[in-house]
Length: 585
Image (cartoon, rainbow, N blue to C red; front, side, top):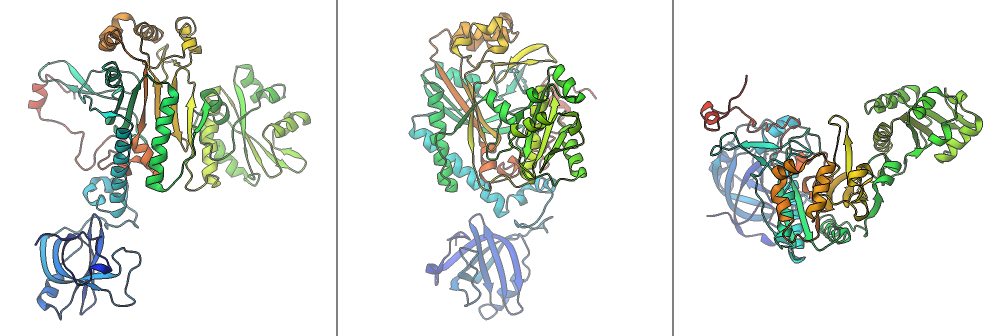
């Protein structure tokens, strides 16, 4: 007989039915006269009973079964005896009295237990990924990924979008992360690149008149990895014609409201919070703000600039800033704990951490003697200090001040449990600079990508004052993590040429790298824009996971290695010869 039910399907209403179940043995318990087996498949667990009064030979065969054997069992659904029900299982009121047993495949003893409530090293999990993926927790994660993808597809389909696949073998157009290159056998010495995103193709789709495009797109970036990055990732790629950024915001907000409601039962508030890039950097020290708690950065440069404290004075004289945060109720921190915080900000470039404890009669610190009483009072007022608070200050160049204090703020929030559990805060960050200066290369580079449109009133500044040009760009931040970014694109060739010039890309190089786009813009390109949302990151946050590797079936390590397959690996000399390649030792 073929399987009649999954291992998660049987209920009280099925009592008396003859059923056939297939799955993996999750546990075997020998109670002398009876043997109980928990049989597991993708949908759940059902308890099997082998009873000698039904079939003694079958009972003896059941004694040979071990964990992770694959079996087929035919039997009758019966009610569990009173007091033995398992309310933790949907199938916990019933069991299957086994009458036939077929071993479909035995199993070696697994290197770890296939269960959720055990600790396993990630390297071991990734090496034996086929076993790790059997765990109910991992199967839940991938089921939720599937559900999210289907909800997104359905939503965009109903909103008039067309899903179009774009090439995975394309042209290298380096900008941002490094490309993964693929040598061409038929064209020796030439290479394809795996797409960092479908950016140029989706813009071509707009020129082609499709107006509303989307793709659940695979993207490849050869960059340094961390918990929310992988060399290959998936993004929800969206592009629209004849729109402005408000249309993008409305679409994405409606889509995420539906996704959170149907998947988590969480009702997101619309419209999402909006903040300018300048305000985000000023208040949070980062363009990825987490506004779920306080402890915002306060600029006190104007207050302390006349103080007789050499560290502050020298930094301000060199054009730096002094900013601080108020760690509420943390004046109890010991000298060792304060040293630990100083070491923490040092990892982000800060050379020191000035601190004051707020006591009944003012501010207490070894450096308090360098400040007049009115300056100390102004400092306390600026950060809204109260007795018992700890005031922490960094003096340095603006990027170091923001970078170190933003990380210290998050560190303390986690340490002090200031972030509400199960909270989701979405924030649009707007009005980014179009360009940023690359000190190493001594040129401007795109803050987002070279096809981002400048705001209309700043187009004239592209050649004269490029640093002042603002972009029609926007990022979407969820709980302090960027989950999406997009922009209104340049749709006129002459503006695109000016943007390339500001980036130090001459007309000859622009034609070589982006000639097909420049040519397309001459043929009636409509105003258009879009956004790409990181599906892996979004799900990582929604499911409260520590890393995106737990929502990807076959991820790679932080060194971009697949421990299961051994990729990347050496190839045969014959293959290299066919590709006209030589590997240097």
